[in-house]
Image (cartoon, rainbow, N blue to C red; front, side, top):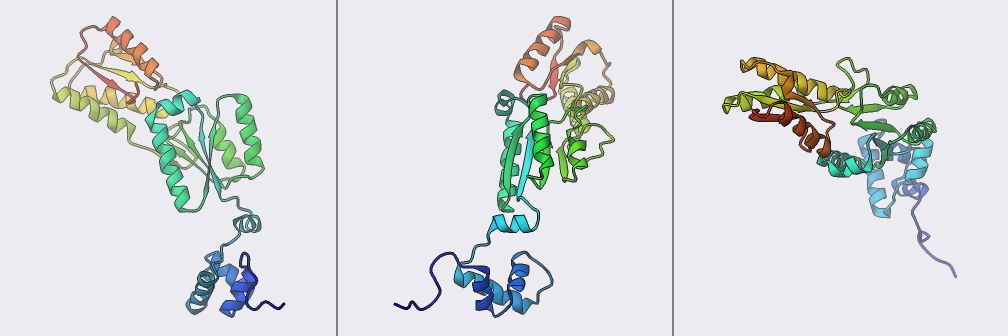
Amino acid sequence: MAVSGRQTGRPTLEEVAARAGVGRGTVSRVINGSPKVSERTRTAVERAVAELGYVPNRAARALAGSRTDAVALVVPETEARLFAEPYFLDIIRGVSAELADADKQLLLTLIRSEQERQRFEQYLAAQRVDGVLLVSVHGDDPLPDQVRALGLPAVLNGRRSRDESVAFVDSDNTGAGRAAVAHLAARGRRAVATITGPLDMYAARCRLDGYREGLAGAGLAADEGLVAHGDFTEEGGRRAMRELLDRRPGLDAVFAASDVM
């Protein structure tokens, strides 16, 4: 028995081309966003795609274009810190939303040991992601440079030093520390302490610099006894606060370098 019309199943690129009255290559250029197509042809192809319900084969497109449509988000921290600190969850939520809008996949990677670092480097060398985002990177971490050496785009959330060579997005951590101390001084606080983050992180050093600048701007004397070192964790903040109270029980304000501390 003869069956009229298009065969059932997933529509193909050839069927879209036939419906639009163009070649297969033209359909491919339209789907991949090439500017080398006239507006009239683009409209015809898009109409054929809509009428047939054609869905591009992402795996084939990625293979043809040497793309994976995946981006790695690297957090060199433990699960305990990842899920205890709202900062990381907000980062993951934001990155996930943006990648979803761009039809990309998120690969979340925690690096807690040298073995896991080596394994991830091998994964990157196999070109299994199109780019890497790195969060909470410490000053001596070579991973950003290794990613770039592999020819993969990399962006840091924060930076390792003032002379960071890898692309980054950062906050004005020095200005934030300065503003925090100015706020406390304006409320009449005269013995302002600080709990720093780990000083192998540029953000922590900048916040400490801002604290010191804020003291100078408010006409308050610097006192190293009012500085305690934490590690951006709740326990680290608790331990540092005990140290401050032991050393300077008369302190009347504290600038903590992170919300969790």
